[in-house]
Length: 225
Length: 313
Picture (cartoon, rainbow over the protein chains, first blue to last red):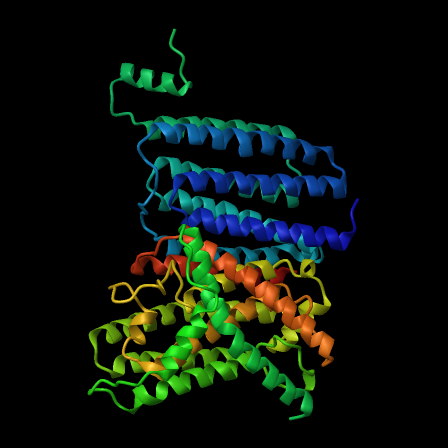
């Protein structure tokens, strides 16, 4: 149990960091730094879950933090870095529909719209500011992830968009809704599948199936007998 | 106008005037060391200014009176703007000065006359520099305004000395959103002082220069004034950033020891920030001109998010 004012300040600071990482994910072009920023963002979420565990004492939160640290800050970035070593792409310079500048502008507008609707919907929850802020930031992070998915061209950056979306959902569930732990586990398994699929797509399906198996074999995601 | 105010104005302006060239050379030194060179001595900018003040002035035949008066106007605007940013001590509140909007207008006036003087001589480089400077200015200005609005939102005042006082009497943890505004202010600082991802202050006669192109036609003491006003602009923007984020040690009364402590602590903080800026610059290559809006948009986004945060808390 920590002092309520200190708790609020810490949570606020972490929100600030999350928004900073979100802005970087939208504009960053180098893939390595994209993965690192994603890992950092997941780490911040884990820290947030730990802080909330200390405040509220729900064991669920600790499990979520552990799962986030293991899968999202260690495993997924490592896997993505591994994939990156094998593909000739190092930077994602292509953007469809939106340039980074306009996506940043649109995400600012998104945050404002979400804020507007949330304060309309929240009613008596308005008194609990951190919870409301968590909801707003969570939903807007998910929407920003969606925007990354359609504005980036490369498959591997699209997958980062999906991962960001999931971070947003996690943030939302931390603050607004009690998500059962089993659902969180399922979502993480989904994430792993998405990453593997993205690796397959990024790797290229231009060659024949046999050669493709060999390629996958090298990655360690397909073991031939 | 009371004695407190007069003392403050004299001390603050003198300090800014004397300290600004040191920061310019320090950043150059840090950059040189990052590149593996030894770099110029720390007092080099002072020597250069002295040398320039002794030289004669040459004007282009095409230039008009704008060219002659703009260095004076430029440095005057910036020195007046420097009074808005307390460094030596925070003057008594009832004097009623230091409005942030007026501060921005003063900075813009200085920039306007600099761009005019770039156009005035009729050289192609000057025209190009002014045109680019105005393009950049028109993109960064909304961001600057947004950052200032965010500051006014957080600290509930548009008075710069009062802002510093509020942060000084509270703690930085009380205002976590200040870090967001500070990062956006840092980007603004980089843009306004024409530093590397935006413009390269070291190059001359290259097609990429912006700030240097505008002062290319100035010579002798007028050039010295322009260079000095560049240093002053850099110092007051740095002071703004430092005192918003870490105003510790700043005096709120006019005792001698208080003033000494606040000057000493400011010098340490400014030197640290200058080193940080030099290292930051060494990490980046210049961004292509048409890609600059991406860089500015991050600053805009951070300030905007700050306002939403403040609406919610």
